[in-house]
Image (cartoon, rainbow, N blue to C red; front, top):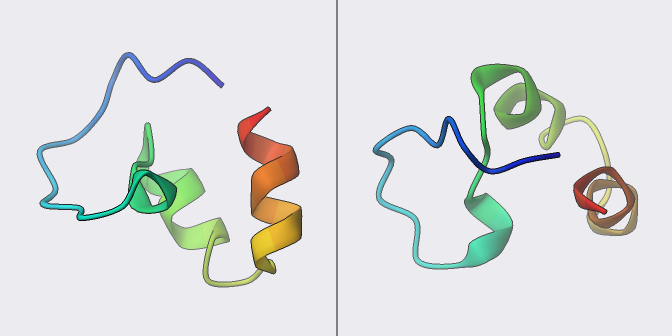
Length: 40
């Protein structure tokens, strides 16, 4: 996914850097490994 439309959300780690609300919600439902695959 392209990190173009990044919302101004204070995130300390890059793992919390989501391009949209859709991914932001999904990260609560998937594991760290699954989220890593989505970011590729």
